[in-house]
Image (cartoon, rainbow, N blue to C red; front, side):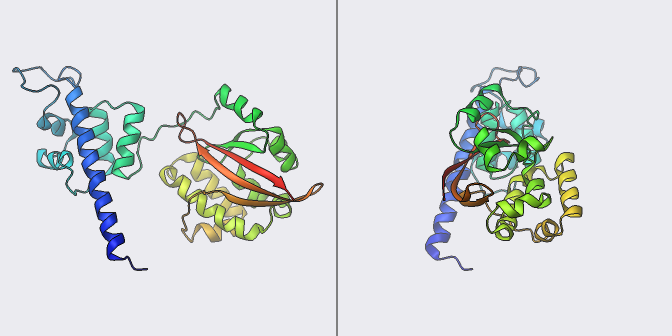
Length: 272
């Protein structure tokens, strides 16, 4: 695949703008942290508020030059662990930390972990949706679902003590009957999950799921080793319902602002 000069120039400019915004954000955050907040002696009177670059660099365990280049928006290679230390020293709030890693275009190694539960208002929201809807965590466990979803999947979430969408697709024979073009969907689902799980592949729950699926489903094992990655972008989803016949839905997925590891999925339509 080739890149046109215009596309390459636009990509380079976008990267430059992102680095500049990242440098300004870090510099602004540094100005808010006093020596006392960072556990440092106040020392001599300061001409400007906040920590000095030298102090941030020392607390992060990196060189002053390197840190200065970050604030200047220069093109430098910074590991996720260093960004994590910078975020800690600058005492970034949750939204600020997420913004930092978004600008840095890398995964946060201390990505906020959900506790496995679903906030009460979210469950109420799912119940109020007049279409099949469900909530997935980072391992695609189904944490909440509504009655239309239960009806579409022939009571599967209720039958399974710990419903998981991947286990259903690859290990439940009913999925092959319900999902139209199962082979094609199964292939894409693996690539979508790899994109979702990229920042969590070292977690015990995700590792256990991958090990179980790889051992029990040759199809999953085959596609997982292909390392394909695609976004869970939604679109047409077709099902062959045992009572209602062929149904077509448009899938829409939202990530939750307060629980970024959770996804709310809705299936809109339902016409044959």
